[in-house]
Length: 205
Image (tube, rainbow, N blue to C red):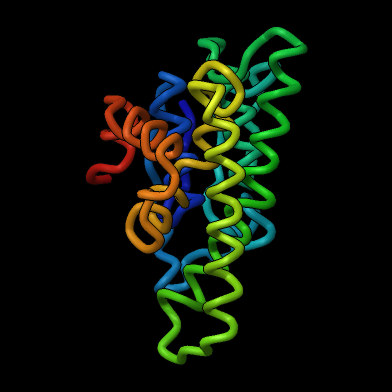
């Protein structure tokens, strides 16, 4: 059994979507960041950087209990453990998945979160900052659109790489920027949104 420490953020949904797609048994443990539960001493033992998501696998490698934080690392771990193809066994296919998994985790989400902070959530609006992060997000969506022009999913078959990119596309691409100028991203997004595991991951918790 895997415990998933979750809250309703982009990275939280990444991990929950990864768990649903993996088919591995898991239990959701909510960490209410609005109440600063991520700073509780027991949680800091699991996620030293006081971030969500995190997981605890009670049957990790060698049957040992292991904990893991960082959404990209979690996706790779559960994908590999599941053995169902969302993290491929073939080394060449893994290279493509890793490239886009790291892009989704380190580049896309990081900058999309800045867009969300300054353009959406902040009560104080600074037009040059909003213009900057809007342009950055549009550029990343254009990058993704070019990639998806010749690929059904970002690394070929559906994988943890797609899961790493989908939540911020769903939250900010669909709702804030719009995908009319990115038809390949729209097709990709809607295909993923229709997956039963994704609908469950984004449902009640």
